[in-house]
Length: 522
Image (cartoon, rainbow, N blue to C red):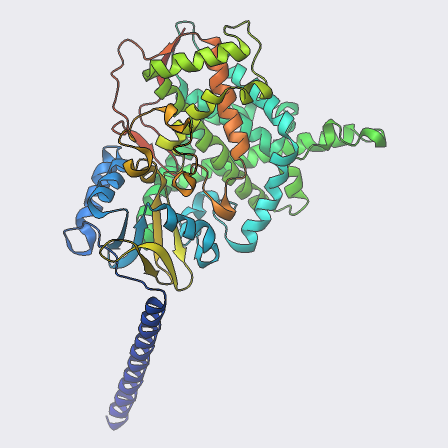
C-alpha cells in the first residue's frame, strides 16, 4: 500500500509539473502574441453574427442553405450582417473571414509564405491524392514547373483542339434546338483537358472505350466533389464525412484515369516507335510537342503519382471552364440586349451563320465586347467562389480591426483565413449599386481599370492559375462560335427567368447551376 501511495504521489507530481509547464508555455505564447500585436498596431476583430454558443446556429443555417442549393446566399447574408472582415468562432475554433481586397492580397501575395493550404491535403486526399491543387511548398513548385510548358509552347495546337471540340458540341444540338448545354459544356472542357494531358494520344488511341465512360466518370466526379465540399466545411472534423458512396465515387474516378493513362501511354509508345529513323532536322515537328503525361513519365513511373496529377488537372480544366461556359450561355439567353450587341460584334468581325468562317485567334482579339461579357460572367460566377488558407506563423492582415475596421488584425499559427471571391465580386461599394446585375458595360471605360485585387476569377499571387489564358480563349471561342452559328439563343417558352443570385446552385469545389443550362438554339 505504501508503495502504491508513493507511486500515486509521484504520478500526481508529474501531472502537476506537466500542467504547470503547459500553462507557462501558453502564457509565454500569449505574451509574445500580445507584444506582436502591439508592435503591428493590431486591433480586435468584429465578431460574426452567430447568436448561439460555438456558432451552432450558423452551422445549422449553412446546412439548410446547402439543402436548398443556395449556399452562396448564406455567405452573402453573413457578410451583410457581420461586415467585410470578421472573426468566426465555430465549434471553438477561431478563424478570420474576409472579402477585403487588401487582406486577400496579403494572404495570396504579400505574405504568401505565412500561409499554407491547411487541411486541404487530408480533406481532398481520397479523391485528388497529391497534385498541384493540394500541394504546398517544393512539391507544388515542381508540379507547376511540369505544367507551365503545356500552355507556353502549345498555343496553336491547343486552339485547334478547342475548335474541333466546339464543332462536336454544335453537332450535338438536336434539330428542335432545345438543349441542356451544361453536360455539353462539361464534355467539351473534358475533351480539351484530356488533350492538354495526353496530347495527340487522345486521337491516336482507340479512345472510344475511355471516352464512352465520361458520363459515368462525370457523375462520380461530381459526387466525390460534393463530399469534398462538405468535408471542407467541417474543418478539422472533415473525416466525419465519408462512407461507401464517397469511396465508390473516388474508386470510379481512379479507375477511369488509370485506364486513360494506360491507353495514352500505349499510344505514345507506338507513336514513338513509328517515328524511329525520322530525319534529325524534324525538330519542332509534330512529335516534338510538349505532352504533360510524357514529361511526367520522365520524372516518375509511379502510376498513383501520374493519376493524382492528372485528376488535379482534370478538376482545374474541366470543371472551372465548364462552369464559366454554362453561366455565360444562361446569362446571354436571359439578357437579349447583351446578346444582340455581342451578335453584332461577332457578325462585323467574323460573319454570322453556319457558312461563316470560324473565328480565328486574331478575330477574338478584335472582339472587345466579347471580352467584357466574359469578364462580367466571371465576376458574377467565379469558378472557385470560396477559398481559404491557414497561417503557419504569427502574422497580420492589413485591415478589419478596431471600431472602424481599418486597423491590422492578428492571425495566429493554425488559424484559418477564409475568403469568398463570390461575395467580394458583388460589393456595391466597388462595382456599383447594380453589382448583382449582369451588365458587361461596367467594364468599359476607366471606372474599374484599377480594380486590382477586388477581381480574382483566377486566384492571384504565386498560385495564379497557369491556364488562365487558355481558359479565356476556350470560353471566348466557344461563345463566339455558338452565337455565330445560331442566330437565335434564348430561353425555352416554358422557362421561368430566375433572379441572379437566387437560382439553385450546385457548390462543390466550383459553382454550377443545379438546374443545368436549358436554352433554345435556332
